[in-house]
Length: 187
Image 1 (spheres, rainbow, N blue to C red):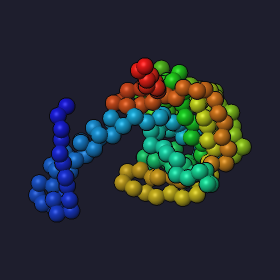
Image 2 (image 1 turned 90 degrees about the vertical axis):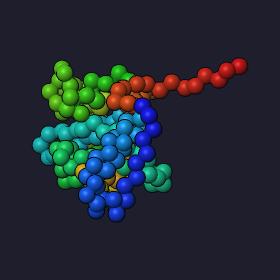
Image 3 (image 1 turned 90 degrees about the horizontal axis):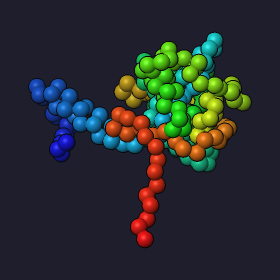
Image 4 (image 1 turned 135 degrees about the horizontal axis):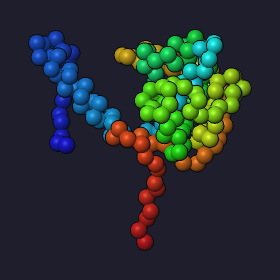
């Protein structure tokens, strides 16, 4: 793919061609982000009656003191309302063998009902959020802040508990799954 150079400022948005420029910028943005390798996580919580989960790739640490992370969830997702209302959630960093779980909670499984917890086994954490068994790590969080940005909400969670598990994280890049492989130095 060739180099794309796109710049859309507030003046350009006001012009008649802004819709085309905005479309080009959006496409270039999506292509750029598709090349960004991320770990694959499932955010889990409860809606008061049943467990709820959604696959995300936007998760990052914010602070180690106190341990805090952020996750981004689309406002159309049922998990969005549940996290906001419940005030607790878990971030389950999936391992390389859990691709099927990622697909299920992304709503695109070929073999499981979308968003159905029957695709995995869970243990309830100290704060009652479902922790996916055999995940690389499951971090239990208490919601401390949230901010709406575009189509998503950024949820900030203070980590209250961590369960460590499998060593090999599931990664996502260029719209496909992969695994981490360290560079071997030449001798």
